[in-house]
View 1 (cartoon, rainbow, N blue to C red):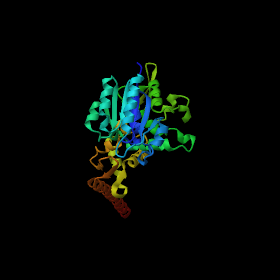
View 2: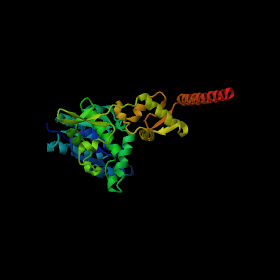
View 3: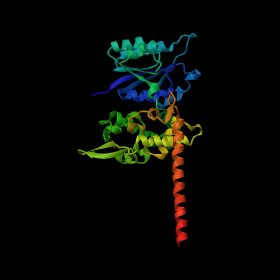
View 4: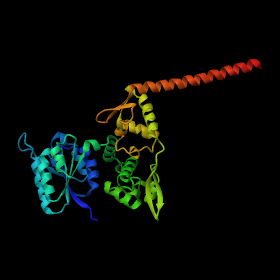
Length: 348
């Protein structure tokens, strides 16, 4: 079955560049993106971050000056182009990336023409625009701070050939996510299908960049994946984790206890946990974001945006008491051993 073709139209005045990876990844699940256009006044300081995103994601910028103060000409340019693309007959659907309700009528008109319309914006997006789309995604809720930081690091590190390729930890996380979202029961996937989906998410992916000439050998290095032969075909299967949620919570308490104010950035905490348990992957536990997993722990408190985590005072005291009990117990054992030794010497 031939994949649907989509036109991606982004309102730079209402969408931050930090969401671009999520936008393209989510839209890629529905079909092939043939048009990628960004609309806005790129000379404005708050749109400067879009410049790097344009190059790294092959997006065509449509510079639109505001001809009159207080009037937004970006909306008009985006609507006109959308109708031109519609009448060209070259796409099956549109993705409107904006948090502006002014595009509600456009979404309705495109759907009347038989187009699949996918909307993407922040939680502040008014309901009329959200319901006018066939599907709508909240970008700020989908944003994983840890993954986003790793992606930005990978995209901006271009000092050498090795820095230009996607880092292995980021790649492993992407592969696990692909298997969970598209595999059989969210646990396994045929190697051929997995390879094609990886290249779709990362067009520059090539196992030779990492020193391998066999895809199966390349996957062997990841602790979260194992290869299984089934009916003369090889599948990539997610490893069942031996680390329980209770054990993870204990590690989190231990890490936070050693921090000033018992507080850390969520991304830094995730990195610290991965150093202790390299195979740890939040998606193996059914979560899309590490911050969401943390909200399930009674021992910590996470800010509303999920960026900072703090140890609950009672948990910290409990941890100290437990540690003190262990120390007292050990001291008691040492004293008892010393007394027994003295008694034995007196008898002799």
